[in-house]
Length: 307
Figure (cartoon, rainbow, N blue to C red):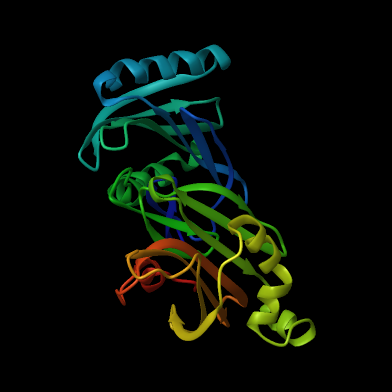
């Protein structure tokens, strides 16, 4: 495979793919889901998963057989060729090739992740004539890099990279030519992370807004206040995000009583990334220790990359 390689992280999966491949579709349900990654010619990778409790851990040989049988029902021309035992992280996995028709085929990688309790299947699609090239890429690049569990998950949200505790779920996102955003939520302590960006930053700052705070006030503040509710007086601080000078706006909710050790704080980081030509905002809402100078958002900001 020619060209640069990037880390793709989404829904607890991490793998290396060509820089020109991107997430184009996903469907998330309570007990299962799938995502698709495409290049300029169509779907290249599809990842399916089903949540199955560890005590009901399936035999991947049997579930792989069922997958092939179901595919043959939909496509009588399909042929499965070969089967090899491999590893995905520390999990036993099966790798097989299927011919979809005379011109198209796919590698199928199937495994059960005991840590995330998911039965996973990855398809890598190619033309028959290019199969060896894509199979080599799977064996040498995708498979060694593939991760399906961990205490922290890597997310690549259309160019912005962040590492979050695995307890955060992506609950909403939208990608547009204007404002794009993603919202993450952790149920156990009602914590939120909101990420937003605007493209064409050079034009926006020149023709529409005087500064970052004007941009935030016009595009995000109303929805943020509506979703999170009102916080107290805002304290403005300087910050650094991914090497850029940034603004941090800090506010807290409730009356600061001395016998209460924690308080709910909102931290808003605003910055302009010249390399990606984007305006960024990341908003965190966490319960924080009042007296501590360390807070969870620090680690998130420290590991964030926007270019």
